Length: 279
Image (cartoon, rainbow, N blue to C red):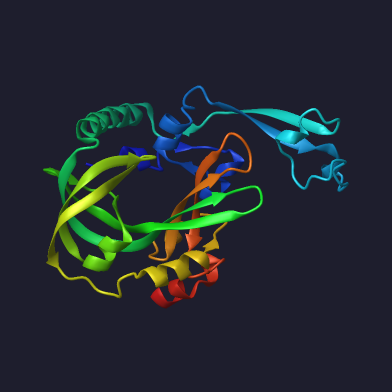
């Protein structure tokens, strides 16, 4: 079984927000989060006629926001977009059938404690960022164990899933890549991803390699992490690339999205020394 909600080969969208992904959007984003296929979505672009001419805002604002509504120079453009389906009709029908089967399996196992087995591919700091109007906060929540495949209950799961662990659990078990483990965990879904919470009853079948994350090292990496403008596959699959949940509270309603950060502080993937060393 694979996770159909994380597929990137089903839909493409031309919205500006997806340019950093070359227009690739996940099935979850289209069918669950935005629910924009096949009807499409409607959104608004805010503009200022003064700022477009290089003139300052008469209210001394630095960006266009909700307080600009009603201003003489405020312009609101309505845009309607529809995602493009990349599959032919027979393929899309087969995809919908597999999606229905996956939903049935997920509904039957959500919030249940299940036996899980697999080999850890990557261990990453798990943190979140909260953006306020005047400041940003970064909080280390623990660590993420990333599995590329494994067994969930009696079901072979040939796709990525995650396990959230606390700092005390990491300190006690010293998880590292290549380590093969069995455990029990509560299955949950986070924006299309399979994430196990409250893991326990660990059994270690093989050793891994590398130095385990420690709290002081993780805090330094999180605080010095660099935001990447785009999300290339090589960074998403890199041990130092952290896809982070962001809560943007600068305006109402609160926006939730994910940003990709480099824990090595590399701003440009093309000159990343980790990538060059692998080559």
